[in-house]
Length: 340
Image 1 (cartoon, one colour):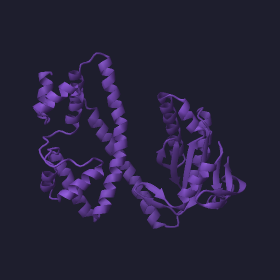
Image 2 (cartoon, one colour; image 1 turned 90 degrees about the horizontal axis):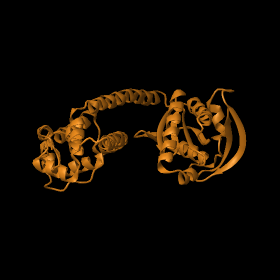
Image 3 (cartoon, one colour; image 1 turned 60 degrees about the vertical axis):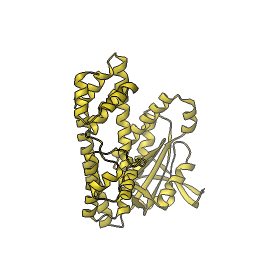
Image 4 (cartoon, helix red, strand yellow; image 1 turned 135 degrees about the vertical axis):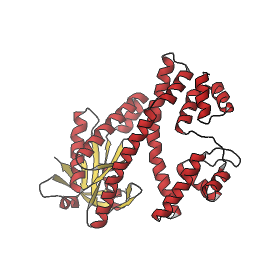
């Protein structure tokens, strides 16, 4: 190992045992990345962390699980001063905002789940960088030094901070608007790619990944352009929310966009009414109705309950009556198809 690399890793809290193990297992770049992301000596086990943060040990275990990691055995020094500060700070902020303990844990679970997805995206980029560098003949020591010297990690942190801030601003506006006017009608839309199940069995993993990436790019751009917002994706299914005219316009535009992009046709369902917003998601009969309509929709069709036409201006959209249809778990519903 380069003397310069060894010196910098030790300065960042790596032990001699860490260095020996990293060389033996060929993960020197990973050790460098870990030390760059989380510098500091690992000197506290979970009990010592709890004592230093001023919290009960059982509570420290629950906080760590809420972040998404299994319990650290007693006596294993896995935490640094940074972890102590984080544990102390999260409890202090909860007290200042009047957040009860169970709500705090749920907030941490949701936040950590979202952060894990961001991290997974960036991990792909970093892993590809390591593979390319090795293929180009660079040594692991040189790759590790690049991690320790590169400013991209700091730029990434600044970008994530920026996105969180503007998303927080928008989320607070939406929440306060709903509180100020409880009569605001919210619409939920679902769309997915027709024939995706068959395609997933035919395409190789790279082609399937490319298809999903293309679909997500088209869907996110189209939905945002029409004022609605993506709530989540599950495989090829996209859930989005907004005012009724925003969600309907997004659904119509998605149908056109996938055709223009050469993607499989979409099918979808939209419904509007009272919803329960919770932890960045939405629940209630309206969500179930939109999902069930999507499940029975034929390719290139967006289904809506007949009552949906009263939620938008007359003539803004064209609805074709389809009569009653049976929806699993709901019953018979008068439906229509959304046309251009």
